[in-house]
Image (cartoon, helix red, strand yellow):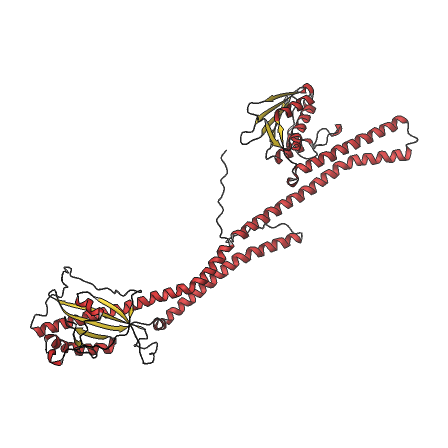
Length: 528
């Protein structure tokens, strides 16, 4: 027989984990918001840097062509950087979030005198100057074109002839590398409106892009622009941000509602089920369903088990009381009738009749005494909270004493491997075996009975088989054999509790009792 498959119960989060998760979410939400703002601010700076790169590339190509014309060279000369063999050399934004922000730029300290400005670089700068001015009106970017020595030869503002080779971004570009730095933006002007083209950011990016012709550095385009402020960007995208905020609020409310419902609903169900029981209504299951914290699910299962156990015990007590009352009613009625007759006509009765009534009183009293004693024994065995103390019992001597008590009416066989000692309550061992032996002796038709003792295969214990050679059991008797007060010997004083006591003793030890019967061979096997 294959073992039944057990469905694995889903793992349920404990209440402390849910509370910790909610508190952690509340604590981390501002931190996550600040982190997202920092990431978004870096993204905005990268956007500004990408725009400056694109503008610098365009200006650099225009200036390179103007310089070639001023120098009398062909304008289609290669603009590839030295050592670059690929047809494409993209320049990506390089400003890092942790990059230091430099102080505000001071006015240049060195200038090239006007007499030294009559060069091809300055003449090319004069040709692109109108383009820089027109571009500034649209992009608001500050652009400086520098010659290979770091001298400003064209500007969208002032500083013409200024020497800027001491600036870090210019030094990097003069070495042939694209360079970007960030500087503090300090403005004395009032903050522009949120939807204006002027920016409110506190960091101004300065990019320096080298311009090459025929593998040689011919110029540097230095561009600057204030980065977009986070508040300004949020205002520009206020519609989308409002929708995102509403979605976050809705999600937060949904999670809070789900968690509160997961805790409050099972508690409310437990309260309703408990109130129904106090009102005397039919028992409702306590077991919670759906998404329930682990503690509440365990509590509901425990209450359900306790309620089921109490209901079973109440039903047992009611049935036990009804059966005991019915069994005790018969001898009580006989005793009462005999006492009334002896009281009313005892002096007029013949001695023989009075003696017969006294014998009946004695027999009924003894039957009541047996019933009461066996009812107490059965009640103790079926009450798990009143288990008698266990003792180490010598197995061999116990069965030898059992055999000797009934003379030669019992044949004992101890199988190999039977434990020498068994820790068990004496009441359990005697209640199971004495009743089986006495039952076999009564129904054995005068033949000796056989008692076989074997070790229990699954754990320490005994398997005892009691066999008699009587007429056997009918199907009707076998179906009700272990019921309380069922007996086929009521006329001979049988109480119907012996086999019920044996079965209860076996169950109290985690065992069972089985019966096989046919004419001439009836076997009771009890596992202890």
